Amino acid sequence: MNRLGFVAPPIIVGLCFLAIWEGGVRLFDIQEFLLPKPTSILSALRSEWAGEIGAGRLTNLREAGFETGKVAVIGLIVGVVVGSLLALATTRFRLLRESFTPLAVVANATPIVALAPIFNAWFGITGATSNVAVVIVVVFFPVFINVARGLTEVHPNQLELMRSYAASPTTVLREVRIPNALPFFATSLRLAAPLSVIAAIVAEYFGGPTNRLGPVITQNASFARYDNAWAAIVVASALGLVLFGLALLIERAIVPSGRPIEID
Amino acid sequence: MTAVQISGAGMTFNPGSDNAVRALDDIDLTIGHGEFVSLIGPSGCGKSTLLRLVGDLITPTTGSIEVFGKSAEQARLDRDYGMAFQQAGLFDWRKVAANIELPLELIGWSRSDRSARSKEMLELVKLDDFGDHYPWQLSGGMQQRVAIARSLAFSPRLLLMDEPFGALDEMTREHMQSELLRIHAKTATTVVFVTHSISEAAYLSNRVVVLSPRPGQIHSIIDVDLGERSDAIRETPAFFAKTTEVREALRAVEASA
Image (tube, rainbow over all chains, first blue to last red; front, side, top):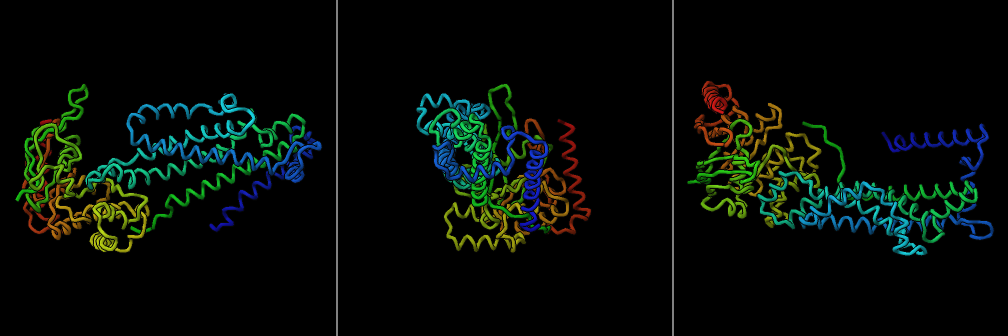
């Protein structure tokens, strides 16, 4: 199948979905505060994209999207780096592996965003530090757990082979464990990239600077400007998609791909 | 001259605990230079364990193992071993040639020497055109040939193979056996070969060591003197007689267990 063949079906389905949405809202005369029409959201997106704040306006979507994006990206990078480094440390130090890893697995299963109000108390409610901290913690666990698995789940034969080569632990780490962990790392990036946007926005609901997507959504919703709130949600979705796309690009660069050859 | 000298070797896993397992007991075995010796026995008889003891992947709880007149550990540190397992165990992130070159890289060969050698090895296993592919692009049989090429890359003095053809279909398997014998004849490497196939053991080996289980002990050693091997031998009465001898030894082992 060619490129167009891959891209066309979801685009067509997406456009149909938007058309049904638009038609449905018009046909059943649904109130805008329940569900605005896609065209209303689009026009809100246009008018609020670069609007002046003040003068009856709550929103500058470009600025809000950029600032929230910054929180998500900084948190994502720090979370990924710290998670990966700590995963490396656990393969090196058995005590750390046996004590910390089970805790991380448990922590990963808990809704960490719930900590956002607590982080406000720790890092202050006016700056973005506590928002970034929430993103870091949310991103950290899936990255740590996946990378740690990739570093440790090496086929026993491969370790035996390296032993038969009289390879040092450092060599095993460099030649086997780290390359083995790369696909796991890529998977964790794919998980973490959209998570970072979710975490940033939820954190912003609870505090931090107000020129961000989170407050823009809550404030517009409380003033019944649902078209604006939806426009902000569209920007947030776009942000998540961009980061997810970046994660896919990185995966492509670090994990070899190709097809099996048909020969025997 | 002696390649491997196993004296009173025993192996107990988790010694002293409730789930202690006596895998091997009092093994004495001498393997000569250039000899091809197979280890065969019912599952759980410790044949893989014995192979791992020789390769210093694990350390015996009793007895001693000498390889080329030194300790097994020293032989490992001197990189006297080539190893191949039932699973090819190739590194997915390295292309086929780079997989074969890995041990050479670790020894510190130059890039040009490495690529010359991997080319030579790929010819040996008849995969000349596949050096630039990733392992997972190849079929199981081809991957296994790469693994064997890798195990031979630095001309190890002792080749340790743990059911290397176990996952292959019958035709590929017989083909690989002939390849291995050809390589063995050419390189004069000593081979210790774990298998659960009676015909494979009889076809490949100078001697077949039959092990009995729990704890693994040597039940009998069968000399196989079939002269020059070729596929035609598989259909001779002499070969049939040898497989029968091995089969009867295995039956006796099972009956006593």
